[in-house]
Length: 284
Image 1: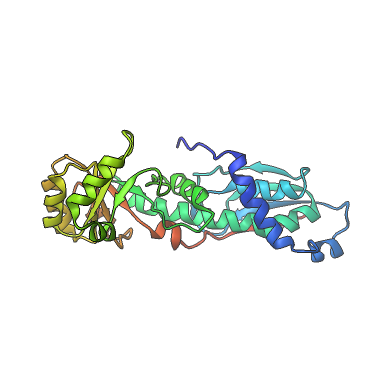
Image 2: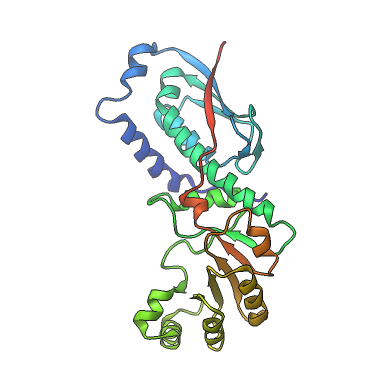
């Protein structure tokens, strides 16, 4: 997998804010009281469930922002599949720093690995078909970049990152604009030459109307598998086709078999369960 890491300058503000939230006004009262200042420790990040890893750079930052002397040796990089008991990374150094950063590091690592794992399950389900699995803007406020990164770690792709990188005309836009034609015509008159236009449709009749106006992509929302199959035939390669609406790993293969180009899934980022990962102390 060719997975490019996110620049540290993007990650550090997120991790710094999370650590400050946890440290509060007085720091780690428990570790500072119990653990001698010069005590060193070796711990391991261990998978307790099967899944796909994502978020190691954030976990690493959490430890090192507390103390630069914490050393992290990665055994399973982001995008790697792990089984229960697999060691993802070894974390060693000042014991207080490791304990202070533990929860923040695990919060990021478990959450993002959960998203990567959920994505990988759908990607695996549609293997053999051309359909790509993509996420949406249904992300945790402030965490969009890293959650979309986790989708890529799981083998998926990203839909638009925000309101500013593509035009997606949805049902409310159409209603307020007074119809499909005025909505698309106004969008086209205002869009830059590199900005693509996608239109959401709920019915095959709407799709026919939209196709006459030559959009770049059509979002086929909450259509049945049979309707999706008919829609792909109707589009006939004139636009990118995207299926959306309550698509699970169980029904994704049937959706992909219709010949659809993209399957967009909001729950990958807004509802994926965490991957259970623990930080375990190793006796010297």
